Image (tube, rainbow, N blue to C red; front, side, top):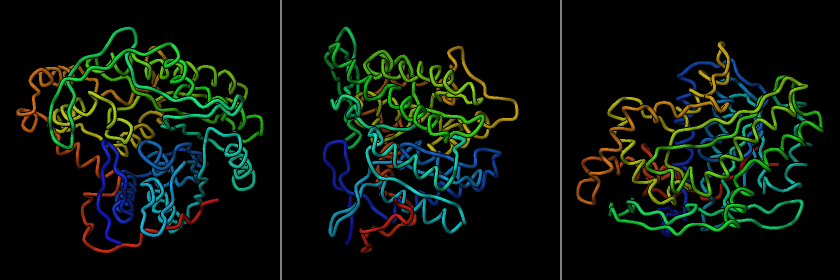
Length: 396
């Protein structure tokens, strides 16, 4: 079938298998070009099919020759209907990994559930024995607590007072004012249940109890802080409370892993175009301006560049793992440079529908967004009919 992007609001309902495959190959080639990392050899990535999770799996496999198990919740294709992009990404990754002689298997299901955890533990025990790195990179907006059976839904809202600021519809380029009403206490509790550290602890407890963690094992979860411009709706809003919980959880897990020399970290990453961030008011406008500044400074990074630097210069550096005063690994250091943020703040005040094409990088934002779904990728003939049904070779 000939596959074109089909939009509903800020969501793309279709994905292109060849475009997704080329995206994965491009990331693999980047990692190969950067050279080997003296890193992990047996890696579990929870949330492995897109964004930072996918980049972590690629970096582990092609940077450190690691065996990888990926966990995700993706939709396979049906005749005349495309799979979700994460499905195509994983199929492409596993094809490349297997051709390179690397172990790669995957489990598709709800990572919050006990069933998926038990299935994962059994696979590790049978195939790898133990894991020396666990990446926790889930981005689901909904979680059913496996203990209570209650389904919790996260919300993106400010706390205490309404939030008003600029945003942009990145499809049209229209810059408008937006207002978001404050949350309730129940909203905070639900968002922490979904996006906080409770499930991370459950994964690590299960792995340790089953003796599936190697001595000195690391586990890393991903977070974001961002600038003052976005903090009312992000870091000081409901999601921020969840991120606070996630970051506090790292210390809890580290205490639990102390007897095997293990350690848990939260890596604070850069603002990037993801399916989740595209739906957050204010963020697309901020990223458009940020991209413009960081590209002009020669310090722009996508997911794969961020994670390669995280592994090479932080997690597996010979000089140890540097952290900030709250124990976090900061790979958002280039984004948060004072000169970068000062320039973005000036551009923010100037941003209008008319000025944005000149002062921002809305085209770069749009390209990155469509790339997530395998569209607007260089070298792909989108007028050519392609097979929409693609199998994942190592799917369990």
